Image (cartoon, rainbow, N blue to C red; front, side, top):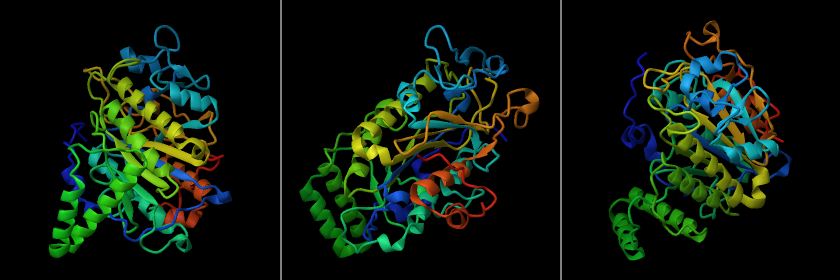
Length: 414
């Protein structure tokens, strides 16, 4: 398949089932309390564009790594050295906060991991990643939304409750949170906010002519009030979700909402710009800037959640990896295996989980990519089983359909 990148726009994803996720939270469930009675928070961060896992977490102990990576290979010495993890893997130097959490036993890496998808289309790869389905084309609901539906129905309360279980961050809610369960939506503004008077007049007008639109607007205004109450006074988005400043602003807003006593407990957000075909950079450069943005975002979650951090797990995932070899423009093309991150006080960290396949040509997937030896669904299943007490049959049938043969990766949660 060609590595030519599709042009991704909000319009396409909006068409694929976004109509039901327009800040609707009129029938609001009570929060889920996890196994062991902890008041858990779970955040999924999607890195759209395909993260280069071999640069984010470099297998510096593999004898074939440096030759494949040439000028972008990370080094363990010299200027801007990679951050050692376990003697074989080293973390990109742009991620000192993650390294600190790793040393504190609150972060881990799962390497050589992928979804069940084996082609290289961003659209299809993201759809599989966020829908939790075994293949592309089924984008009606996301696996986090189905998780919310699977949690105990007895914990739901009547309409008008102050909180929502699910938070989707972005102008269009990420597919992973779309579905029948209500979603609280929030995004930093890209244009100045309308005044209360204008909003009230629009609400009255829509109430007379379009009740569905009126309900969506009312829910949006409720979201805005909650955001303002948590100290988010309407600062405009700085730089967007591909800019480190925007990443941090998005993370801070999401953290404030899920930290609230009556805020959501499960959230999804997306950072853009990980499609590093050209001039990827090594210890410095394009990828390093974005990894630094991700690293600061994780630190913002830790800081803002405060005492709630101990019951939090954040999973960072991407649709697929990148080629083992660099290309002629000193970048990497669409690949397969990659790295996933887990961070949070609820994470049993301080390790890299990997059945390392090796980087010799005979060991690469299709002689070009890091071969995946772990399924991302197993990682997610393990976290959901241990954090929320979700049973294996529910995980295999409802949350990740047709995945009975993929067992939860246990022991990821402390």
